[in-house]
Length: 101
Image 1 (cartoon, helix red, strand yellow):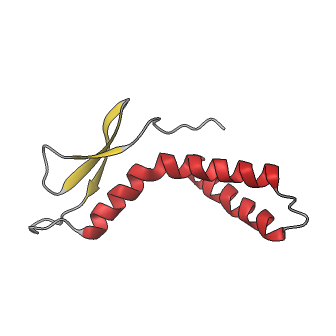
Image 2: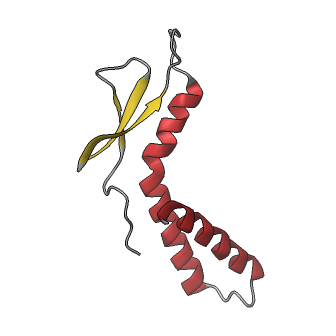
């Protein structure tokens, strides 16, 4: 499946302009997203904000893993014998659609 998102490994980079944000970057697109990791007036990075930035940076790997798992299940398991496999494929398909449409 062809995807439309920025290819490559996404990484978290400290912002040069802001103490409250980090940027998400890829080899082909520098700083394409910003995530708030420190609230205004706070001296500390917010763990939830940092966790959000890590999840966003992991998105391409998570998507490709979902696609690979879906292909492996659909090619190697008789869904008529294993109805839970069919349900898992449906859930993975929903995740893939949410990320790509």
